View 1 (cartoon, rainbow, N blue to C red):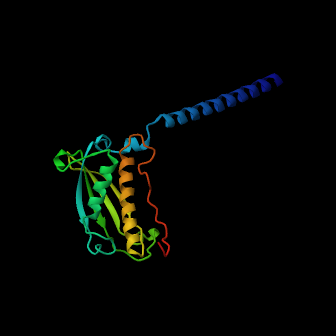
View 2 (cartoon, rainbow, N blue to C red):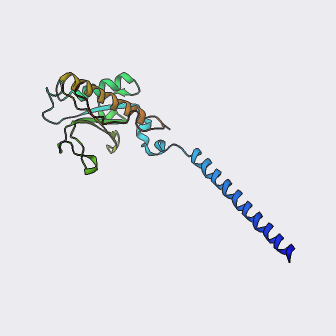
View 3 (cartoon, rainbow, N blue to C red):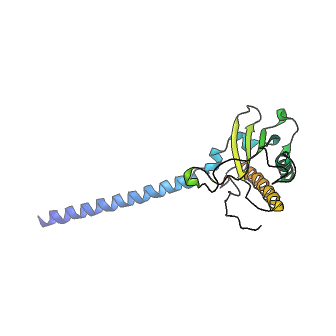
Length: 200
């Protein structure tokens, strides 16, 4: 009888050890599978964006009341600035005919209205202007991706202009990051809404 109890205890101990070992192996296999899976960004980004070589920049205009104050220039400023940014990077061939483009990128300066100092937890943020870029497939004309970059608030005209230029540069960097296969991040410079000082 004593021998039977000892034998049963050994069996239970052996069964526990086997179960524990199987669990460890299963966890290692899952971890290996996760690491071997292609990056999420490479799966999520539409193929036309990853394969694009030619780009046509479309001028989506600007909301009223933005020029010549608080921003210098005219409503074409965001269009010209983005075109120059993409051209300087050299990743795409800039074309003058949308029919020749792999991608059509429409840039627009938007000035939303909303409650001053509205919190995001209430569904709205302080209404700062932002640049909106919609990327279309040049062949199907379907919208593939939308990127927005806020233009941070300022007091001085020169700071408004500087923040405008920085937003355009971030937008260009976002496009470059989006177009890289197996990128770890879909955006090179995620936007931050730092509280401005008084001042810039």
